[in-house]
Length: 610
Image 1: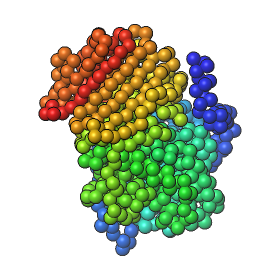
Image 2 (image 1 turned 135 degrees about the horizontal axis):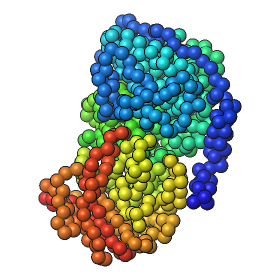
Image 3 (image 1 turned 180 degrees about the vertical axis):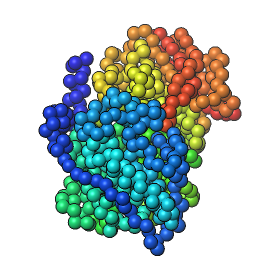
Image 4 (image 1 turned 45 degrees about the vertical axis):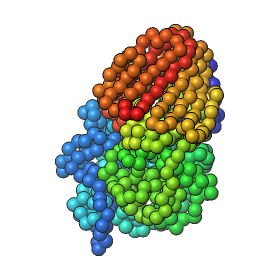
């Protein structure tokens, strides 16, 4: 295992290892620059009343009568602000709250999952109250100022858990600046707001190197916040703000060039993290245009456009939902509408307009409010409908046939994999996700769930000898990264759409999967070999009244059949779990097919009337 860890760390890159080591050692001995920064925040009036300007755009109802955590968990609100250090799921608080952030542990806090504490301090309510204030609701503006004042008193600069993460600080910066835009106060903000943004940028800048070492959305979020917040403060003559903006611009361009592949795939292999990254790039560009700043690099726009098409290709237009691929931690920024958390259309519509100069969705809908509040005019030209596509850099094959859509996850790992989801298959019939992925549930919970959701058993693929496809070598790190074998690129002919790929794991087990989607019939051929005792094929079904008869499983609408050229030792429906929203897990039926020697398994899935 030691050699596996060393090899895995080297795959992360020597530069990244050195950045993380320098950060952790510096923090531990108290010599890192982040341990010495000082600022004061506070005041009573961060935003002014809007005067004669009244927006006619519909405002969000979020955080008006209820606090909303991770898009689903609702807590009634009274007149007072929430407890900024409490976890509403566990009812516990982070203690103590008067320590400098770098003295608090990364995990193991009594309050439980720290993300549950951070959620209220992401300032989603700042955006919602600013929207309502822009429509003439002065009560919401009074509440906005009162809550910000309370937040500053309870979270003095760089003390307590809400200052612990640079990305959390970055999300607050973006929400504060977009609120100033909504209220038309970005050119002459109140001093209290300037002071608050300044304190956040000092925090972000102090650990930017560590953020870059993660090779994920921490780097894009923090770079964008430096650019946006720096140029926002530069207009007010804040010392050093122009340099922050320049640093943020350069870092953002480099992060996008490194983390977003030419085909639009993102480094985190996650649909929801892709949305977070894309919303960040979209707002950075909107702010750049509004501030008349110099355009970003050519590569930035090429990659942002490709990333927009990537998400557009993943989303079901009827519902806005998308495959629950990869990590899903509930992140969603710049919530301008009351669309559901799993509705990705607001982000797609805005990004396609900004970076591709096309509308993704032609009809009017609540998903258009996001672009409207950002001041983005929707083009008249409609983008072509996504067809079959292979995003080879990130490892995704998309097959389409009429209203059917299948997404095959290929083992392509330029960056660290988070989930053991090689050859996972998602199946959609219109807006209905029939074969589905699991999500994440929580990053700080019982070991049972930390192993289950990212593990092989939580995906529509084959597991060998009760082990994961890649061994776990850290909380968020897998070793023995898989390499694709026998890849057959997506192709279409008169018979349907096809794709195939395979891999051999670190213990010699082999899996090759070929997928065909044609005329409403999905056919999956799995060849497995090289395992010691057993291989288990799993199909994670949409919740319903499924019944099993022999090797056929069916409900009122769909039929799934399994064939094998070797004896099937076991076939049964068991309870599995999925988490479509962070901190929420629900039961779903899982069909398990077990064999004890190498062979071929064939699965057919179709509508019951076909």
